[in-house]
Length: 107
Image (cartoon, rainbow, N blue to C red; front, side, top):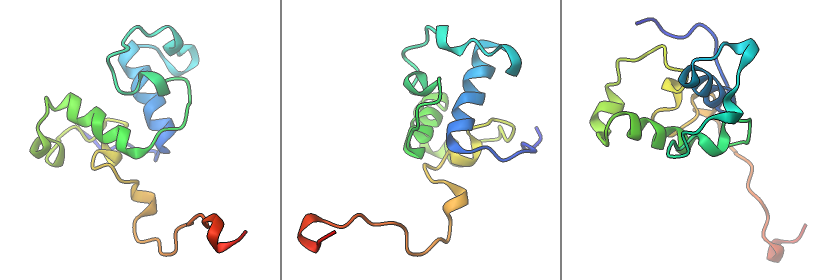
């Protein structure tokens, strides 16, 4: 299988996976009527923002619960593939991520 040619954000990856799952094309993506409420992506199918940890849960569900299979996943053309480890590769190596101040520290 070939690697995906375009990079998707985590939200776009969920949407693309949902479109693939229901068998729709991008122009007629009828994922809002999806009945797969047992899928971890179901609450996020219409664009709600999700943590990349949800992607990891999806991959674990797809791999039948095998963490080893997730690491060695051969399905490179899956929209979720870059996020399968529960991390956003676009954020790798970034230093100084935003930290919210507590009320004790002042505004």
